[in-house]
Length: 386
Image 1: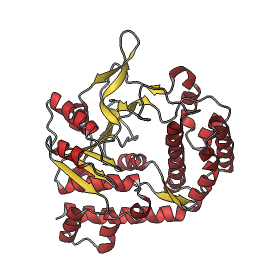
Image 2: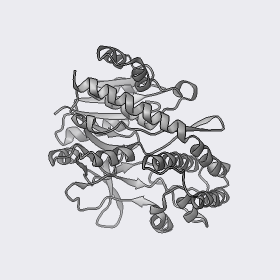
Image 3: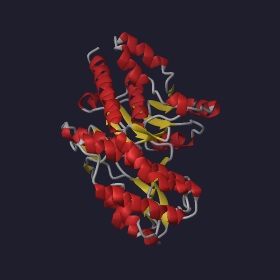
Image 4: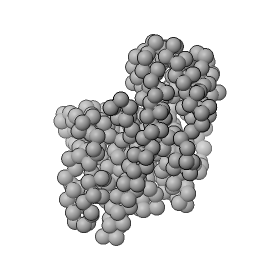
């Protein structure tokens, strides 16, 4: 089986994370056939060169993907479908690309390289888990990352995934309005967790006893294995973008949609219960300080705007023909105001207006989705019947 690692980044400036995963694979006797890195802006040639000495490295710069352009011509792909899959219309002007577009580009390169299994990792995850040791201290415990994914594949899964250990994207906080904020963001399932943040600091750990893989519909894009032969049965990754005051915002949830669709299509998805370490704010083990750290505030702000965009689109995708309740809208306004007062960061004041902008952009989001779905189906039909 040809196994590849896939990563998408804005700027590829360090080989550190990929090198750690290659070391981990070698330690446990797994051969990584290829590493695929899709990037949109900067490339550090030194980092790329060091990585290329260790493994077969395929670098893809978005909007400049000549290898796929040539392959698509041989497949007689319609020009419109090719253009949609290989060119993002906001990248040149704004320097950002939707998460779904990035992940699909990684998949295209994996198919062109004739890989069998692609395992996605993110640029801020590592091949070990956080656990308590026998003294109660939090420690990093290395795990057989590739082996755990292969265990799920060998158990009959087409898709394998798991969660993360490390600090949650919800930073520790304590202010009136937390409940309203999460309800307005449709994250109310995290209410109990966030209320307890003064105790556990929003740090998630791996359990000591790792069970057998179990069925799931929840996919996590930075810890995700996909058998490429299964792609015709699932839709593309998709996450829309929308504009507020002339600036694009990226919706989250491209992996959520794929998980629901895969389960609905009869594909077996297994959680391998291997919560690899996620250095969420880039400063572990420092406890995230939402009240006063601008870096934490900005990261959380973009998480909120990503959830807002996701909520609007996924509500439509699940069959609702309205964009949400007035109660949620009012709750978001209350929560955003409270969050601004807690942090003093004016960014949070704009969340209700951003929510309104996302709702107004729903027709465009639907258009983005239809284009992505049609273009992806066209490519897969030609690829798997060539």
